[in-house]
Length: 205
Length: 240
Image (tube, rainbow over all chains, first blue to last red; front, side):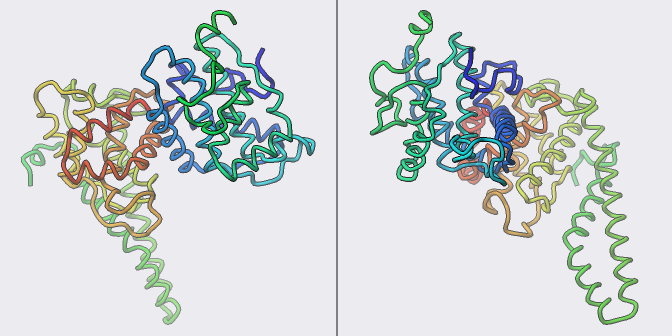
């Protein structure tokens, strides 16, 4: 069963393509982002304004980064699919394409959505698309770390991202239950150990 | 004028003239309003002149919008769908039908892209588009879909399908990039399979992708480098 933080596949825009392919189309990416942000806004009791041009530029930077880091070996395809969501998250956090027009009205004060609504919406977006794509490809539902909702982790996240936006890639990997390489969290080749999901794990899961 | 114009049965020259007049009226509209406002402030009959100017501009807009709507409907019908243009460029090329529907579709979509780029005050010439399509349709030999699109893009630029100069500075790209980016956006969109209900979203996405690639697109157009443009279209056609 999927985590309550994550939107179900049915809440994402429909597509006839595999999600890993659809997510690399700007029109689907944009539609999915809008849907997730709308849902998060309802949950938090606030309104977001999305900067369409900024979102498109972020999408293009993410594609360029995928191109730069995509491994040649087929055996690493699954791991890279999982890693890709943390690169997307990094791109979003580095240049947030949305702005909360009002303070969240619903959550209690210790929730991440109240603490940093824009980053929270981007987190839910990346986790939702990631989970749906991984489940579709490998029939495994990713389990999220409790840190996803711990305010202490979010404090640390926000502080560290001010120093280096690459930290955000590690933050998402941590939420997905992996141990990031904190020296180079946004570098696929430098990932530590056998911590990313791969097809062998899927057959066991 | 070209041979093609002598045999056109669809009133394109008239549409082009009306659009040209509308363009001039729009560009000079603000100046005319300023002038008549100034007269209205100083003279008793100024308000009458102001009203006349406004009425003339509104009539011109209405007339031009009517011919645009008629041309757009005709283009959509001819491309095989009732609501939206869903045929892709290779399909259109393969069918080898009259160049008029494609030129009309190019006119409509170029206008939409320019609007998205906040450069809607530029003039799009459907006649130039048609000339470009005629040249492109004659393209022989088997080339890739992306090369077909690149050839059409460069033909459109050669025919100066977009004319005029920008009126303000709030444009999504540099001035020298407007024409190459707008044309590439449309041919990229024409390469992409799309359903009627997401055709407009696909056009907006194609425009945004091309805005991000503006420098590279401008370079390809400046050099007239069809291969470079083909490579860009091939690389990004799956990202729209």
